[in-house]
Image (cartoon, rainbow, N blue to C red; front, top):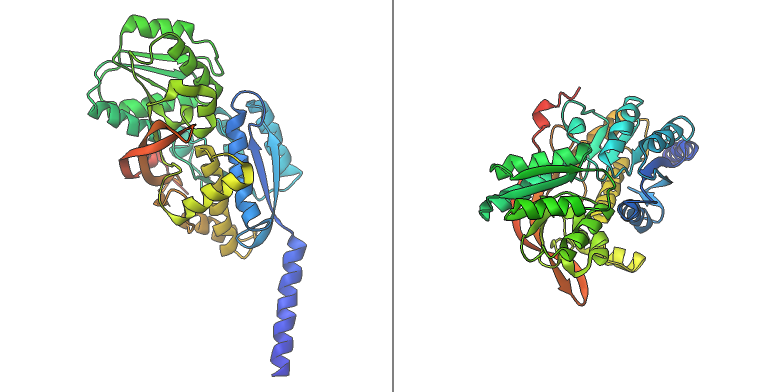
Length: 388
């Protein structure tokens, strides 16, 4: 009996020493913390950190080291940070990128080195389709998804003359493509603006001239704030209804937009009123930690961390077990704040998508779910992914 106890104790000490020598799981977060769109990156960071704080500095029961750096929405800077994380810091996992053009710059090279990349936001069609990779997972969406839901909704509401507007970069093109995939009508106009643009006088004049019966737009962050305010100031809010994905009507944005957003319908895969235990805990803990309501982006950062936690737990904190870690990620064995969640063959979500309305609750602008647009919705590019 004593001999067995000694063997067990020796084995335990050996495993403990081996794990301690390996150190914490290293996670490198590249996100936007300054300039245009910084509120989005801050929300992703805060949601991710909340999950770590809930475990006292751990994920899945094992210590993690989170390194965060600001890409300032610049592809070259994001690439430099990525190179440093991989070559100098020897990260096991990367995450955090908000913008699709930055993701396209960083992700393909990173995953080829053996690093796992878990996207909490950007989901360009390239990475969902022909550019998919076994080490790349997106826990948020494929760019087109929310627009597809709104395209279906606008079609069902019988709008015939829709004006489309988006910034001229990969995500902008994906979003309008997604809307048109389910709207099926012929848009009255399709206009692309400069990324980061703040003055929309010319576009608003074009909308007034075209006389559409609705406007669908994708303008995330500060771009959406500027457009909605200027659209309202031009007196068009009551004449021509706005529709869009959640990005311009999220909790992060609404306080800056103000009452001009009231009543606007937008599409999202998450909202604070989704009724499940994981979401209730997330919303309550986020409000307590940060003294504000969580945003869509915060929920995605949080789910990204919980997904990673499930895979770290599955491999016992041993990141040398890459195949097992990848298998655990694919399984997505965690309680998502969204409820229903799984990965498709291209490592992008299969999930429910909702239509929300901007409302005022207790003097605060927020969203409430009106209806479910899609159940277990996948993306249009999964067939192009030839995963090795």
